[in-house]
Image (cartoon, rainbow, N blue to C red):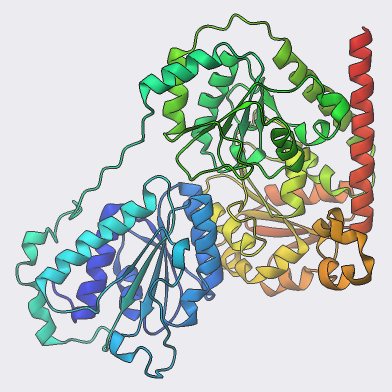
Length: 594
């Protein structure tokens, strides 16, 4: 095999080893300095190429693919500020443990800090937000450098993938020529190349990573202690793999503990047992009269810290309980509650605990109390919502609970949508994957992340997003048009930042609208028209149901805009919450009298 010049020997060797290590997808942005790497990716038939005009959208799209597949995905940019546009996605990848490989082309070192256009310091471009950063040397015509490139590619892929997964940054400075022109002197590079396995599918460096097993003695001790604790809860936060849900549920059933399951924990939806899953805690934990007698003696936590405020307050109010964090993804304890941390693979911990736990011999009144509150709250919600003719934003997720097809992916935007999903999207036996960008809870890049997720997801993608977040990433729609993706995008347009109406800033009206409410006066039909996507304005529940059903029945991406009013949205949330809680109090009082 021959290469045109040292740049192409370097770039194609790097790409080839990434592919041998397992890379299957790359998002490529246009640019001159990245030409050798871009052409190397284009030539490799084993890697699917996704082309994007905008680097920020490209990086979030790559993030979405990586979230969907659970494997590293690469994104490539040219030099200068192009790569800096990857930074928000890199940050999200770091804090949501998503394996992302950010590759930036660069000008060679002799041009740095000499006033050369489109040149800046790109070493450690993402700071400590990258799990690992490597500044590669300029390509040279030496077999030793080829060996370095092959070994490095394997290390880059493995570092991004190994638990806890995260982003890796690779900076490659290319000298001229950037085009694939022949440079005979460089072609001596391939002397001895056969010994490097260039014609083999076997990676130059084969990396085997294993799961971290818990200490069996410690697990046996903890199992014995938990076996004597009747009043415990399991809290499942975001960022858990769907495959972990059956293990957590089995542990909960053995212990007789309720599972307070964030929708992003993947515990609320699926064919596993759902009897212990509590999905309405956002409402009933707000009422102290309902939570009397629910003080836990043990709290077992999986996944990221929950962002639900009533649940956070509940955990903080029971500091005397034993708090056990299980997992390998960082030190998850912002309230400083942990009494025990088991830094091991959660599935292996569940398996070990189940093996050591005694068979339950306690009564089930503790679990039944939680289940009764859940069921009473569900009944109140199901009684309250059907009669609401207004377009209440929370009801939208209850409607989707019934409308979503088997195997769908539900992606929620941050701020209001993800909170309403937590409160009103019900437990369901459907195999629905529920996702959001909850690493740092940003509203940017959500359209691109969701579309990237849907690009490799076998079922229907449904994105529910607020108007400001949609505005942030409208250019992400180009991917939907370019790749003919099947997606339903539901925009809740209440003309501004509705989440701030629920915060203390709302009590200071003098500057509220200008600084926080931020009305924009936009509707989004022109955006749909720009990208040639079908658009529906759903101003009633009948219109919403019809639009969603029609979207699911057709190929391509459609946009459904649901109008709303921020002040009315605040009032409806309060009215529904108060009505539901009043009903729950009445039901529980009646049950007590009975």
